[in-house]
Image (cartoon, rainbow, N blue to C red):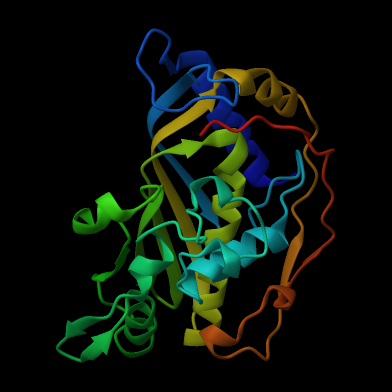
Length: 276
């Protein structure tokens, strides 16, 4: 069975059994009907995925990998903050009348900075270091720019990555300040697993571990019964990820360059309420 499923089930069980409820607190998020969206949460969740062993996608229910990759490319390749350049509607709630989400996510990655080796944006700096100085302990991306927070329609959730090469393996630490576990957990895991595979392929490395650190891993009150249903399902074996081997440049990858072979999964949970 998929180890990603086991990790997800164990995390959700820990949150439900020993998490802290926000009931009685003044919370920011609301449901569509205006009701406060309370959560039960665990602080400081750390999940580890061996990308060389399997691709970490849930089989308990389907994850739309193509849409997840499209969003990741929107941020990391296009370095965009405009939802009109994204092929889904998932960011529409945070966009203004022009489609902008403000100076968030892709905008931060696209800002150029001066270094002793030249001028790079954050993505190109990672590519440069992985090719020219892969054993550096300073290969970091940070999207949580305090000077621009007031111009972001949503503060970055997945905000920081550290890339570390050990031997010939590329390892990634993903730091996330907050996560809606039902809606976003496997979405984020698969996105950054794909990113690790992309970076490894174009820099001549092999994939190692993805370590996912979540400061506030929470399950919303209206999601608890849905999570409980998922936890009772039977996991399937992990599928195999196939990547177009002809792609040698980071900016040449497209959504269709990634295929999951043998992806079996349970039924989708429909009409999941999303707190905003």
